[in-house]
Length: 114
Length: 114
Image (cartoon, rainbow over the protein chains, first blue to last red):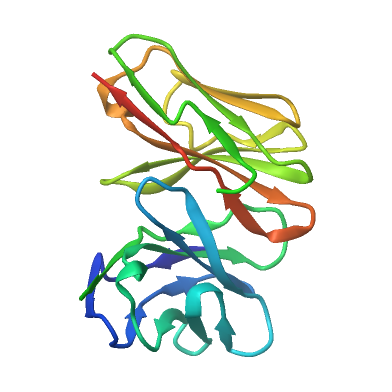
């Protein structure tokens, strides 16, 4: 069975500093990995995904994520945080291609402080 | 949120009443998902459909919950009778045939059962 873990419920970072939101996964096959962001009173919005290829994936709003197969991780990063990045971030995984739904983590709340 | 319409956006009802949540997905989808989000349990998959046919409803918490998809343009999630513990944000999401790896979420319905 596939699963994903986000070990931090909350991440606080000062504006302008780099941010990292952590995610580890477990699948039996090849992982398809995703990050979504949820702003207050909104649905989840797709940020980026890793399917294959370059381990560093770039997405919307200046975010990027690094796939690390040996550590089974897919951490979300941004070089310089903005106050407007404050939101709830979800990591998700699916075991390879196919038709099964994504499995989401519990989410990490990011607060960027001015 | 673009393309997936949910109504109502907010619903307040009393315990025992029937509640119907609605989803109008964008065209070009083949899968439709219903999720529930609470602080305690995070994002839970309730049920999903493929080409209007229910595939897996194992996430539906009780027989009080039912979902239908009479056509490709419309789906409902019904709770009868509702209970205070059903209070949550309910999301509809779709997967499109053009981008089969990614799920797109609606804005959600915030349900409060008093």
